[in-house]
Amino acid sequence: MSAVFITSTGTDVGKTFVACGLIRHIHDQERMVDAVKPVVSGFLPRKAATSDPGLLLTALGRSATMAEIARISPWRFAAPLSPDLAAQKEDRQIDFEALVAFSRQAIKAAPGVLLIEGVGGVMVPLDDRHTVLDWMSALAIPVIIVVGNYLGTISHTLTALDVVAGRKLEVLGVVVSDTARTASLEDNARVIRRFAGGPQVQTLPKLPRNSFRHPTFVELARRVLSGG
Image 1 (cartoon, helix red, strand yellow):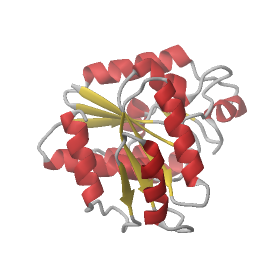
Image 2 (cartoon, helix red, strand yellow):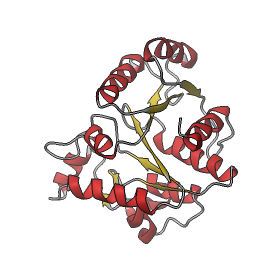
Image 3 (spheres, one colour):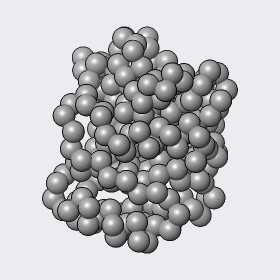
Image 4 (cartoon, rainbow, N blue to C red):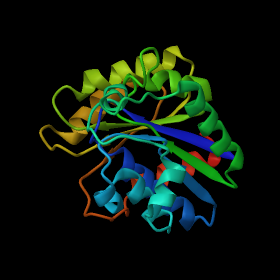
């Protein structure tokens, strides 16, 4: 079995899209794959099918029922805020140890590759003391970092890579996703590549909805399946 954590420098830059593309291409290799997104904010039951967990389930070939969503996303919050603040809005909190235990159990139970999609960016708070980085560190599995294409992404990406390296986590790849189109995708990727050191940096142009035909997905799937 193997597992990969998909994280980012922020929100709405394509983590779920990359996860869905990986699911499709791992399926194409006739390998078993599952995915979980344990924590999700901005979740509305009436829009379950188009939520992040709903999209993951569709890619997995499953129905986005509330039972299935609860299975892969047990910590769901309505407010589109950082998880700690979204939980406070509902007089709730995320039990960090329970989150780590859930993730470890999902890894153990997965018959093939397990993709764990994080929430927000690397340094997003989960509670009063823990961030997504702490969650990733506790699991100690390889990570993929998805970043946006905008003015400032170079600094954000290199900062994320630095803090991840400080926790001795393996980075399988960096994906620069052309979500905003406010800067040159290739220029940003080239500069990130120059300073990133070891991790492979790939670009992902804006693609039609539910279209995952791009060499970046092929290469990412290869790296996930080969372990590096």
